[in-house]
Image (cartoon, rainbow, N blue to C red; front, side):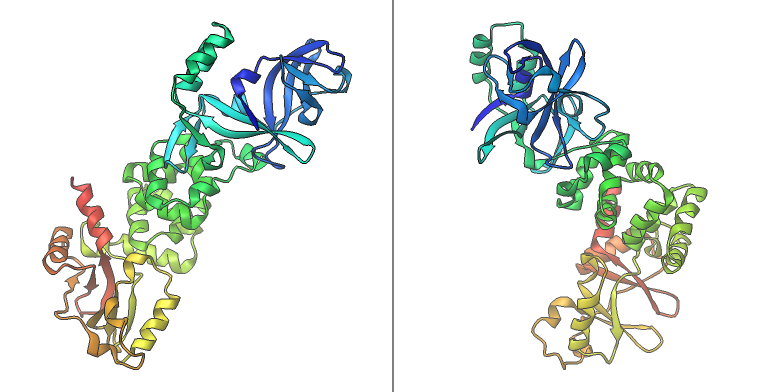
Length: 413
């Protein structure tokens, strides 16, 4: 297996099957619908226009690009919208390094020659994001090749394997044609996705969010700072945003909608399912700096006469976030809060044991209008993971989770 850099290939003389110089390499093309890493063709600039030379018609690279076919067999380039052109679409462009969890700029592309059976192939091995690629491009043609190679050997290589690269494409039509999905980015922790998105230009942020699944986009959006949250939301269509909001924690979704204009917020609400829409409307009525404004309506609760087995069954079907599973709350038949059972207390208890025998004392709760500063003080005083919120009749209406308090405290720093 031998390698070469894209910038070494660009501008190289192309010879036809008779050995005649017919043009120079203008571009290197990938057909993403077939293989996102394998070179499909080189685009040759000739006196009769740009021509498409399939890689299968290339016999060698010594002293230039040697073709096994005649110039007349190379098709004139028409369109090409479905191709990824390496100089145009990668050089000097930002890409996402999903392994390093950051945004980087491409200085060069490393290619390697291999074979599948008897068929030679050329594939992308990595993208160069360091000084070596920049120096190679800067000095190409300005110094002898032998001197340039000697200099490059002294510069540490800084590259990212191609399998750890996600592309950014702001044009929706091209995203579809090039099959750019940002699937590898979606496997990262939402906080890492948020950090990456915050480093992107506005159009690129929108492009990334358009490719993420609703649940991944929702988790990442919750981790982004409020000002950028608002900018991203305003860049997306209302129906797309409604799908994302429905996957967010209700308290975070309400905070987000509350920061938007009434017109924009209402447009998103209208695209939501009726049940979720009403829940959002209810939460939006509360002041943001109160317990009710910070609470989520996704929590575990059972009636006071339930058993450990019923609690375990509830856990298996619960669709809320991980921050809301640390405690099971107990209410009477009227919804009045009567106790709380930490998840840890369920681990060794038999399925038939009543939950009331496992309640945590003392039962700490707060009113809906409790100020967020007092809420934070209760978490600190009692080392809480969750705090139930009750109305004037002591009915359980929601819970504040530890991550809500952390978010509040961070906003004050």
